Image: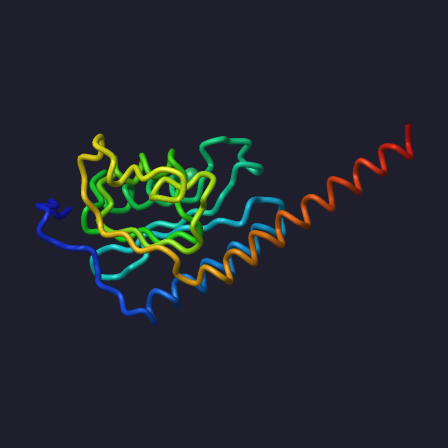
Amino acid sequence: MAINLGIEKPIELTEAQEKGWMKRLIKRAQEIGDKGEVPVCALILDSHGRSIGYGSNSREKGRDPLGHAELIAIRQASRIKGDWRLNDCTLIVTLEPCQMCTGAIIQARVGQVIYGAKDKKRGGLGGAINLATHQSAHHKMKIKGGLMEREIKDLLESWFKQRRTLSRGRKEAQNQIF
Ligand SMILES: [Zn+2]
């Protein structure tokens, strides 16, 4: 196992490469959305651009409040790398990470974060609060947000709309029974 001396840097991706990964994540997000999970997916690339971690939101399936895509991807990448430090890694995620995940990203020393849609309600990278520039942040990382934001917002909005319609339908069905 190579010892990470902190020399290797996160990969620099072209815009086409970033979009290529993001498109794959959006497709996966659609698939898990159809299964009832909030459609958010994440992956981690090592310094050579190899995917070493993947996670999709699995709160419902796992009945786990910690089942966020980023946390699952970070855990997998650390296992594969054999190191909890991910300084030379890039995390790509469809939605701006929440405060919990941003905390984990900082703890894992992730070198670069690329995210899709901004999250004004819960985003931890400036949407609601910016933990990356907070005085408690001991780790600097490269951050890029807003990649393919329109597509991802559309996906999330239609998913939430569909869920609301479904739950209204269930309530109406219940009213008919009782
Ligand atoms: Zn999260």
